[in-house]
Image (cartoon, rainbow, N blue to C red; front, side, top):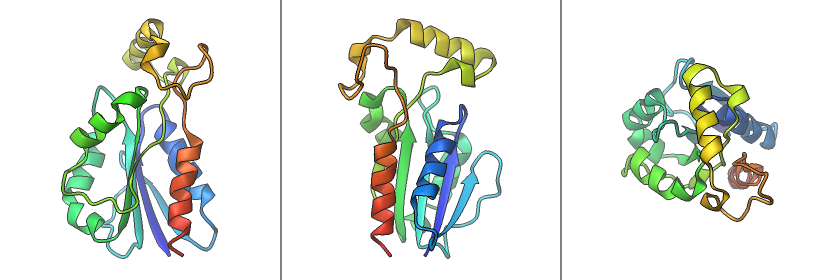
Length: 172
């Protein structure tokens, strides 16, 4: 089985999620892991499974990733496909997926929320300043009750990544 995973990241969370997904799959699966911002992206033809996703920045997915998804919507929809979104405000996930992913994209393996981060130490320049301002104004009630304490800010949801890996594994 051949799996294509394409991600776009700014602060590194989407890359870590994509790597966790790759590492959670059995070694018998041939996985191609690509960064939409830096790598040449192949057509999904010839792959059995495609996973596309990235982080929401300023309310939008990465432009290169969106362009790829739009260009290959028909090809992605014709194979087993999943999409993922990393976002700090999990309660906006449904809104993000409805706005950022083409309506014609058929994700037979689902559209998944892999969590989010607000960690300024992983950013530079204006991004770092914006995240610091956001963190200082965060109200913990804005996040789902799955966060265990008032000290906790949004984090990656590895259990969601594992659930997607299980779905892919079931295709073997």
